Length: 511
Image (tube, rainbow, N blue to C red; front, side):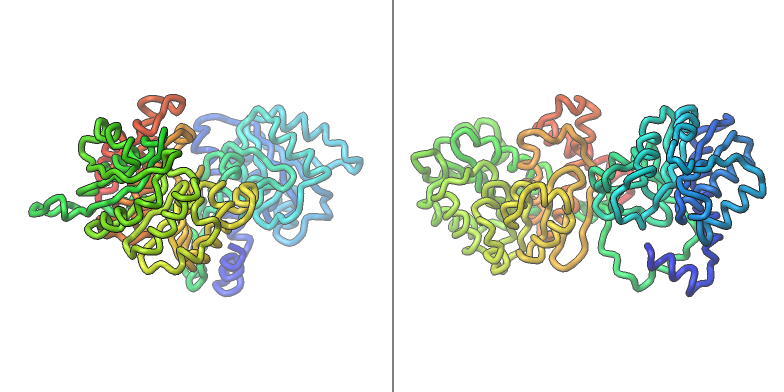
């Protein structure tokens, strides 16, 4: 964004004051779009940088429209330089109300004004903020967060790290954030998404040519990714046309994981699914998965899949199109050894989840050595074990952790969680915006594993399979939550809503 700004002003000759004027106008438009036919009491808190200059433009435009506006300065007047200084001079020449920051640091006059306002505009800091918020600025952030009025942040909530989404000491909790020109990563990732509130991207008049040639490898997952994975079916087809997935899963007390994965695969278009699991669980699986074929595997005394099942699994893979492995396996030493041998011995596309990830014991070179396509679907704890770091470290840099794992494994990585991150080796990363907290429930990840496996079996590449599955999985969760609430949502609800969600996407996106 900084490079784009520089190109716009220095190479294309667009005056920075024009961009500042457009930025302020974007925020004013969003305010008036939400509060029509009302004269408002507005307070605009302006820092000493360009973000503060944007805020003064907002003050001027809202005053022109008849609103009662006061501009609160967060720094002495002498601190405002360049464009911000020009904007301060303009509102001063217009004799618009300005509250100067007291030299003593007593901000009670600011607090009173902010608390009485129907609209509070946060124009303290923009994306250039790189240090922790402290002193008077921290007090102002606290006042904004205590305000009863609606808070609009300019570009990014002040104090929020624009790359990680984590607050730098403290940060504004906005109701609406108007991100200028492009969305910022910190507004999309959690916890930044909670601080940002509703995010609107404002067009400040920077031509697309200003971004040409710049590497942009971050994207959001879109409905079009689902359309790409679900083209219209030919009339002259049969179940073999749509792939045969083998699901290796389950142990005593955990047969449900494989059942959910298998049903998720069928709901995602797989023509055939075989579920291989410990022999005592076959009867239970047969009773609830009428469309799924089952294969019994030898078990350990603890009820997990025995290493003696290796040859049987290899035989099953001979006439399958893809493998999904991991849900419900446990970390039994013998079962983990089996998993590693299976992965080495097949060049079929594989989605690896849950305890199959734990079986790798951080040895990502084993995945790198595979000739077949691979998708890894860790949650943050599993990602930490794969990389040899803590879960906290993973969550502090979800994109970085996903990129590191993808590069070291050569696999497409799906880092699950709120705002799932999908990354391809050495390439782009994608952030998924569908889904809701109700999906934090047992079996949700098993359904996703089956969905990805189905698309791999249908011949789709790992990235397309992952993007489409993650988006559709989240959309099914949103559809289910509308029906049963987030509190009552179960993995079975996800299964039941894959079809309706898919129908909505294919219809509304006009695929």
